[in-house]
Length: 516
Ligand code: ADP
Image (cartoon, rainbow, N blue to C red; front, top):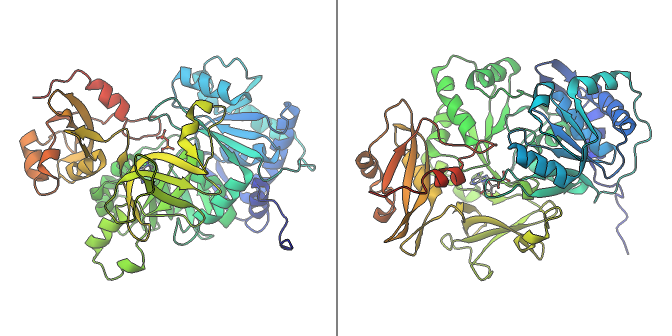
């Protein structure tokens, strides 16, 4: 016997239908104005015609090179509807990395924001490079496509490269099915809890891990999308949140660290804002405390491009009922439970699963219908995948109910005297010092200990704590042998192309450092 229910493929086209019909009165807002989902959908169908006229055929790769805008969202739908694959190129990559990813993905058409066109290097395989204005003019004159190709749910709809924090970018190919299932799971109440009444501000760029899926999640539920373009300055974000009555926003920690002082001064009306989803890197405690005090919920999100992309949130569970706000914060600062539909576990060095005992630290592995099973055309990295499991490169421990905490990326752990120091935990402790805005910890070579931790600190107001001050602050917060050997004061912590602490660059800058 076979099931006799359903039969409809899980595709981006199905999300599109929901956006076009039931959610047609939702809207996308950007610097150009407001568009309803109904009108956006009409433009999407015209854009499919334009893409076809440019020679785009099912399976072809079409690149976007753009900030967050309604036009970028149009591409998120039109390219998959045409049966093609959208490659959201990270506009902050170096020229050689852009040439690499565009060539590697085999992009034949590239559509860029007009003000980014002259940022593009020579791209040999690309037949058409067009600005968004030119494309919009073509869309205005095109007829809506009325014979969309039939796509299989396992067909690719997007390719997104990792941000290259730990090496060259690696291509993750999203299928229609994975994209659909991710959007369904992500909006669940225990996960992101995004619904029809929300107004969602993705500060995360649409080129970072598929904009965390928000361009699909929001139109699927009917939530509105507010796009801030490339201006993620605190002033622009504050104005946007106030004017657009944003309820749900998302981005990497540093965005919200920079916005917090403005929110605390009370110069803008943030009363609509319920939730800030923070992911891409661990959330520092003072950041959560600061926003909590303003009545804005900080929701920690974990995911990777390879988990297509959001896979975990740190919402307290039933067993945490009755805890004080302070105790709940300790829970919320852990990483959380894997989304319904996915599995997670931690394994030892030999690959044996470790007990869920709240102490055993091993590599986190995930599997499920929206977890990558390989990189595009990259057989050399096949050992990251086995039996459906993805080796995440993150080190974590599991509590008995599967609530987990990432202690570090395996590459960032500081190896001292045969023991490991979690750079994330040490950073968290240092960032709880009132004079510290941001802090990154890396291992610096030591003859005696192999490596010793050094703290790179960006002060709140120009005055940084001395090493002795830091040691005093850290006493009782971390083990004595974790105390950093030195502190380096900087104006800004070096960041990657998507705004994470750039540990590779920091390590390189301290490569010849002599420890005191
Ligand atoms: P890249 O690996 O190039 O940085 P991704 O953006 O896909 O590209 O990064 C995923 C990684 O980001 C995770 O493996 C993890 O190390 C880190 N990360 C994401 N969210 C969190 C979080 N909430 N806490 C700690 N680390 C996180």
